[in-house]
Image (cartoon, rainbow, N blue to C red; front, side, top):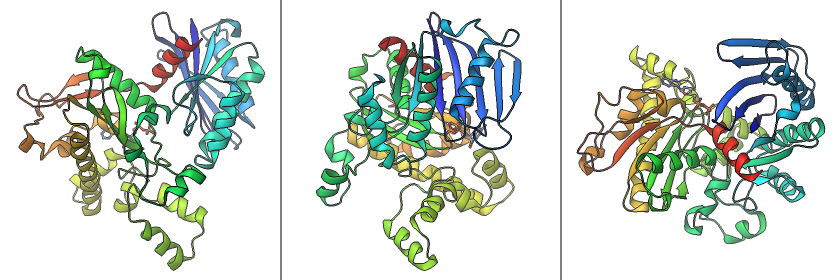
Length: 395
Ligand code: ADP
């Protein structure tokens, strides 16, 4: 069975074609600058690269080029589009209506439209990818896998904000959580590694990348998570502020005359470790700058570690007995220093990282000492594979 996985952003589209008989990636690619001059498709098949540079005015044109690329005689991997059995789409916000992956029908589309108010950049872009596939592959089923779905198991005391209940009732203002596909993948994988039934697994999943979130998993399900109504809440991120006193927002809007759009931009694009350091949103640059004596880069890294530490410890207390703490995402998988910094201080609870074992990247590795009270792992996430698996299950 061949499944195409599509992840659409407002001007980009990532894709992977899987052979689900052995979960092998046959080909993958990225289209950038959709609707902007200089559109470009880059496809990778093993070590071979295939590039198309041609203006693509919208997502339909981008999907058309993806189909051309994967069926290209020399650079493609299938001879005809009829070989694609289903398409799995990454969707961002499914609100309270979507609690698991679903075959897309009118009801799902309605939910996506309804919750666009909380994901104005992502949900409409996801829809554009879907509509392009419906137009160009009319006989193939489309499945939606939502970032928010995994977190729909959170209890009310964890998803409500401390504001008048009427805002939840009238406007559905609450915590939804994101990165659900990754936290779900990591939870399933950890259960396998520990040879435990998922429903008996309590763990902390730390997805640390450009966007970062931590999830408290209780009895195999999301119990609490750091991202909120939108992906802005929680950890200090690459360019997002994470938690702050809401008065900071109203104060800055008053002082600088910012409108909501500008304030949104400040909090989402100009804050986080980039804003604090003034150096970069990339942790490799920050670590280099801090090593060269840049004080603000050093402070940004410490802020990131301390916020993460606070959530890991708090969530452990929330879920009770903890079987594992897992690091994933670009930073979680690659930065031994950040993992060590976050876990520093947990020795007092008998949780210890082994510096030698911690010297790893990606894959699946135990990095805690033999006598550590909680096992600590590095596990590479794979959201695309998770989407392909769910799609296969549903069609
Ligand atoms: P996204 O949230 O966009 O999916 P990723 O999970 O791919 O992001 O993470 C990207 C981030 O991972 C980069 O911005 C960088 O900060 C971090 N990163 C990648 N490699 C390393 C490394 N070797 N050391 C430290 N940080 C790294």
